[in-house]
Amino acid sequence: MAKCFFVTDLHGRVHLYEKLFNEIVQQKPDAVFFGGDLLPGISSDYDDFLCDFLFPGLEKIKKTLKNEYPSIFIIMGNDDPRIHEETLKSNENLELYTYIHNKKAIFKDFAVYGYSFIPPTPFRLKDWERYDVSRYVDPGCYAPAEGVHSVKPGEDIEYITIQDHLLKLTQEMVPEKSIFLFHSPPYQTKLDRAALDGMMVEHVPLDVHVGSIAIKRFIEEKQPLITMHGHIHESSSITGEWKEIIGRTHMFSAAYDKNKLSLVIFDPHKPENNKRELI
Picture 1 (tube, rainbow, N blue to C red):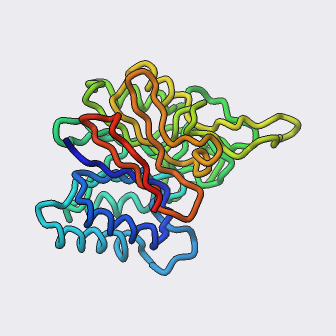
Picture 2 (picture 1 turned 180 degrees about the vertical axis):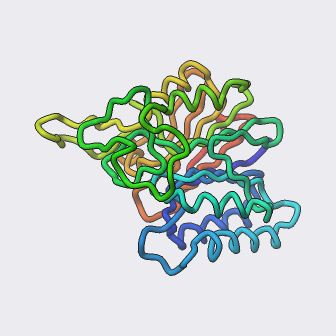
Picture 3 (picture 1 turned 90 degrees about the vertical axis):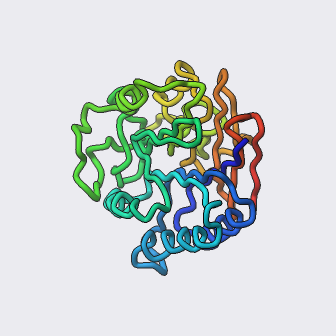
């Protein structure tokens, strides 16, 4: 048995982080998964949110819980400028968390995979955007090379896809022992429903489902044990669902569009044992 927390899209909101920190101390989970969009926008009380707030907060929890401190796994999201990725990488030696974008880590007898990229959006920051399964871009969206990057992409973004990344990342995965931390939800599910009803761009109706086709196909074909998702805050309010099952895969979203902490709690040994607390 293991108790796991999953949160995402906190966007630097200190009161939500403080609620999370309190729940970690009170409930003592075995693991905490941060699904991206960690950082605040332009306006913040902190010059460096990671070093001035998040890391000290985790250090305080570690001093309190000592050997009961949870394993913490982190990825970034599309609103997190990638220039801050180096801070996450360079501070892993504090042993407060494991940064797992495009990597595999171990939690108990499970393999944990992290992946931040999402399909193209209408937003200009493109650090964490890649083509999905082809070079098609939805109406109203910008291609990955057409926007702004806080750091130079380390690959040819004109031709690489999310589908390519996932194929390479998961070559040796054991599905029934694999847990995935994504930022994007899978396409055409109850987890990727955007508030785009009736909207059009140049007389073309917009798709109200904005998740990743590649991630959806991956789940259908490979059937990992658990996948976690965020990005689309309003989806659970529109669909009434924050979880879904495809075959043997349990999928959870902790994204939320109200001013509460959305905390998903699950046991990877029994993924059907799950709940969402709104705090």
